[in-house]
Image 1 (cartoon, rainbow, N blue to C red):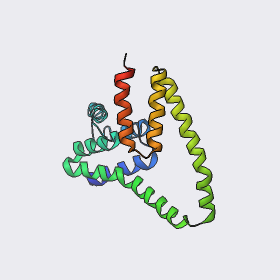
Image 2: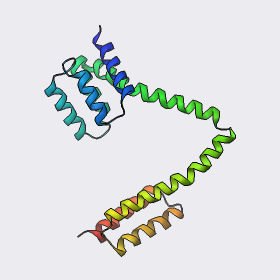
Image 3: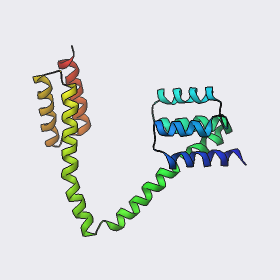
Image 4: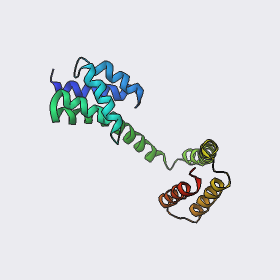
Length: 172
């Protein structure tokens, strides 16, 4: 069987049968070691992909594909990695687009919105609680950030400014 087809099929299987992260690395280890790369090459690939910025799974796919089939192998492995999630997202989008005018979908989203908002507030509270060693300064930064966002300030600038203020006022 052609090496490019084997790479493509391997990465299709890995991405259909696992979520990204440690589960896919374990499955990919089982599928790739001894077939496309040696164990030491795989360990090196995992280490390299964790250090580089970007998606570890895609970098690992390109590394294994390149080791097995050169540049065409790297591109084939990349295509096998991005095709399943892309098709799934497109399918979900098509379904949601067709259902968007249904009354129950609108009611579902209206009911989901407060639940997600509360979940985000509790998550933010937990993060603030664990990371706030700043006392009143931390509370002040949080309140000012909330006020700035409420006044429609650009979110990225608010987060950046809060981080910079935190460096100066909350550093030991």
